[in-house]
Length: 383
Image (cartoon, rainbow, N blue to C red):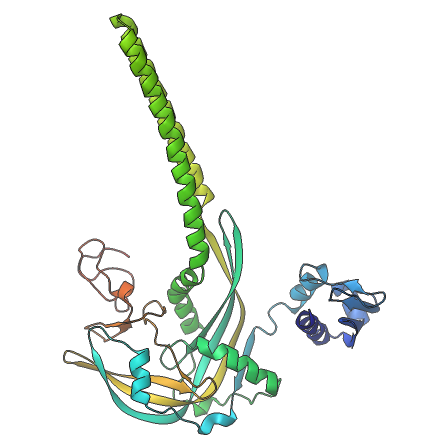
């Protein structure tokens, strides 16, 4: 619980409360008059966060009212951070850059040619989202996405090394130098457009284990429901057949047939109603909330390549980050997802995943979802 204690202590300090750590795993607070009513804290308090509390301490958990009041008071402050990172390993450079690109960029219908390696600065955007998925069960997860603003490549691999690096420098990040980067920073609209276009695929990938479990439970429930009502229909049919064999009166036999039809219709209506109830039960709603966004300028080794498809060519770059000692991940330029291999479209040589180069559901012709995100260019069918 020490990490939780540290977070709450820093949040209280940022709110104007004097804090001091006490053992075991506690914090003493001195709250000014202006903050007492907002945080509902006395002037002097002792808070405990571990299994063993200091003398006279009040236990604080993630579900405590103090955490909710702190979140409300802090609101959107701290949601945006911008800085310039200068790791000491900037002098390092990738060996065999062409081999690195071959491992990251596998093209099914095109190729590339190495055009050179430069040292430059680039900007990375990191988004931290909180996802709440509700179906027959509730699931909460966090989604961390890193994006290289120069080429929209994914940089999730930077998360761990970046946190370790920031822990060593604390708050001593250099001020961002906008003139040092070749590309202009993304505007708020560009970032929003990227999120609207790419988040659905990323959320589906993140929630795939939860979705698989939900689909498995739904399939089992549907199978049990089908078996139950199949037994009811078979039993009604068996009874009617037995009566038909024993009955020699034509009028009575006609009445039994009508009664059988009514029973089967009633069972079918009840079965369809139960299926509809199960469908509603397993419907999923997902709420995504932005927790924090960070833009950091990084020194990188930029590997420039020439994409080639038929007679078309396009310049593209991939950045090797000296902090993680990895190449950024190539992602689909239509949906932002990662894939084992990619296609190049004929029109603009977009790098797209197989799903975004799939056949149209109407005319069965493949087309690029990067060039035509809303509808098929051949038949006009919407996605």
